[in-house]
Image (cartoon, rainbow, N blue to C red):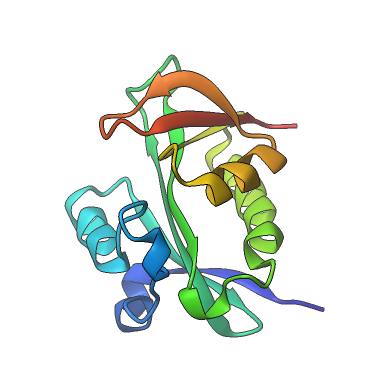
Length: 150
């Protein structure tokens, strides 16, 4: 059985900094270092390491913006699988489990994310998981997607 864990990246900063996006993803997602620095500046961000069978394979960061929308918005702000572990189906394995955890931990009915229109692989994955474009653009001109709890 596969053991999937989500670990506070602030507690394992050195290990987190070893994770990297692939060359073709540069410009579509921030580095781990940028994410950790952002999380140090804004307390609402929760950066995590994604571990499968005790191996760090990815990174994510999420947070609840309480003043957005009627009841606040929970953003899955960053998500990636390390370049050495890509093309193994790990994102499809991990992301649904992470989303369920976020729904439960934050007691929300919707999760938001934003994505560059050119990031077709990510868009395809998010759409397969039930995310839909809501017509909004974020401050970086990324298209906003939302997934309602099923």
